[in-house]
Image 1: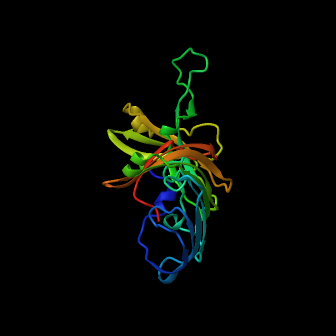
Image 2: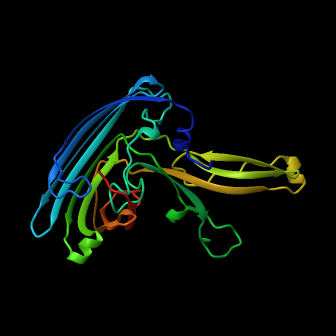
Image 3: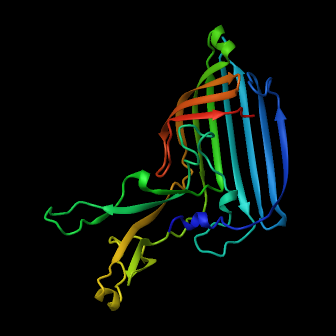
Length: 308
C-alpha cells in the first residue's frame, strides 16, 4: 500500500552481463566548448551472455555546430533509442523490460521538465473529504478524488523507446563576461519516451485499522477500477461491537496510467553556462509548450558538469 507494485517489481537480485559495441565519428574543434564540427555515434548493447538479464539495446545520436558570425554559435542535436527484451513476462500487465533497464527523460535531457518528468507513469490519487451536499450535517461529506498533485503518489515507469532533439543558439557577450566564462543561449527541446505495455492497475483500495478488544489489525478492501463509490470497511465481529470497539479507516486511493504517448513534448528557454573556478555550471529557465497528461514540468534547473 505504500509503494506501487510497479516499483516493487524491481526489488530483488539480478546479474547483467553486457557486451557493447559503439561506432563514433567526431570532428568537433573542442570537446568542452565546440564552435564547429559534428559528432555522431551508434551503439548496441546485448545483455544475456551470462547473467539473468537478457535484452538488446540500440542507441544513436548526432550533433552539429556552426559559427554563424559575430561570435554566435548555432547547434542542433538528436538522439534516439530502443530496447528489446529476450525474456517473457509471466505476469499479466507487466512489461518484459525491467523498470531499471528502460529509458527515462526529463531534467537535464529535456529542459522544462522535472527529473524523469516525461513519459509513462502511474498516479495514485487519494480520496479526500468533499463538501456536504446539502449543508445540513452532521452526515459525513462524500469522498472525492484529490485534485492536489502534491498529494498524489507518482511512479515514473520509463519506456522502451525514446527520441530527443535540440536546437540552441549561443549568444556572445562582451570581453568582461567572456573572461568570466559566461555563455548565455536560447534553446528549443523536444522529445518523448514511450512504448511500455499498459500495467494492470490496482483496484480502488481502502486501507484501514480494525480495533478489536484493544488489538489493532491492519488490512484493506478493494472495489473494481471504475467504481464510483469508495469501498466500505468490513463488518466488525460481534464481540468487538459489544465492547464498543470500532473500525478506524485509513486512506483510500485509485490508480491512473498516463503519459504513454509518442507525441513530442516541446519546451523553449534561455540558459547560461559558466566556467567557474569550481567547475562548469549551467542554469536554465524553460517553459513547456507541449506536454501530455501526467508530465511533470519544471521552470528552473541547475546542473553541474559538462556534457560530452
